[in-house]
Image (tube, rainbow, N blue to C red; front, top):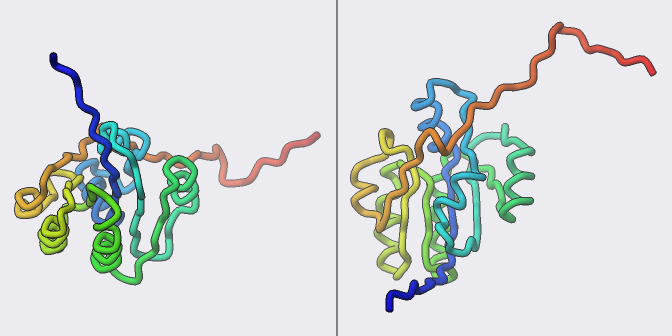
Length: 172
């Protein structure tokens, strides 16, 4: 009998927001392209349970709408970083290593190679999700699995346009 065995894995997704955004902007040719978490999260989890979703973002201009959406849909959080996300993401990954089966790092940055090696030595499965064209080969080689982020995983945000520069007042 070929019965399918269900594997119950606990997964943490840690996203280096600046790295993924830059990669998507480069591939799409526009700075208004954004990760579509509604398509990518189920694809990354592939039936496994989501333990944590943390989006690390350098700078002060973090969208409150993004933070709200991640919290409401995935109980996720957005962590503002002083400089790059490398150190805060690495610290969080090592803190979570004993609490999850798999850590998915959304970044193509070779700075994470040592983190991947360390997490694997702790018995954690490490997967990388990134745009293949902008991902360091050594990172793909070191990870247990690579999820390519493709144009199906992002959308281009077009802000609402107003026909004139003035605000329209409505009369009641």
